[in-house]
Image (tube, rainbow, N blue to C red; front, side, top):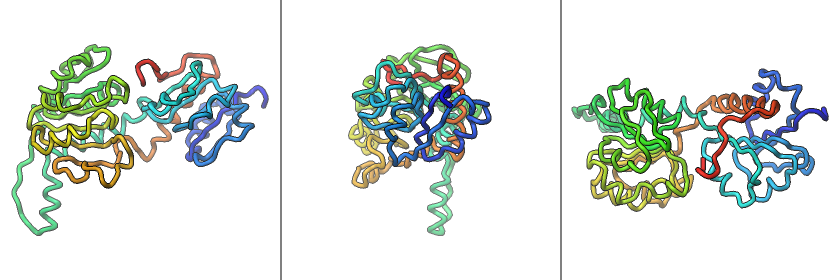
Length: 319
């Protein structure tokens, strides 16, 4: 047992991770501690843990783990980790980038269909017993602009292109990619905004993306365009979006992420006609722990073998 690496799984759903460790043949190489999120690691766990998997950690904890060499975040976004004032500089931090590529693209396409197709209107008319003829808007020929062409954005582009949509977008390091007509650098964001019928935000929360969508950039969008935010709440300047939607400078917005979650009941988003509030449903999936476990076990094998880890967080870039 003393030659095994000590791993701490700090999560409420440990079975998928333990099963994945066993299926990968790594059980005899690790000693695993499991801990529910509401509990705190014991002094013994803090002293012996070499690898940690957790959704988040409080300030003051990581410096008390002298043997910790690698931490696996359970989400793609790691702004909470990077905001820790005592995040050890030498700690390898990996994220769960790519584990939302099944659920989130489907939910994003569902949001686009909600905008273009009159099913929600039909349900309301049914409740009133009213037959109201409505015409669905075609998606074929429409332009979808994606700010943040990562794994999720590329999968959305694939699906959208099969629907006949033209897809353009931005990427930090632009390069041609399948199903995307134009891949532009971030400094050409306004070009994407001006061309798009739907603007999809999939960017991380960084100092560069804080309040990216403000009054100036909203003014570059078509008056008939919709904004969809499935990235981070910090991307949007809330008051500017409310003003743009209220004044009909853009058609509306579907928001799945917010600066504060749950969204406070007195936030004006709830009461603004043209803004649809989703309770952060984009990424969750009934089997998501299995997806994260797949990545975690891949990285665990690499950690044990001294090989490069996957999905390492670039602390300078912020994701």
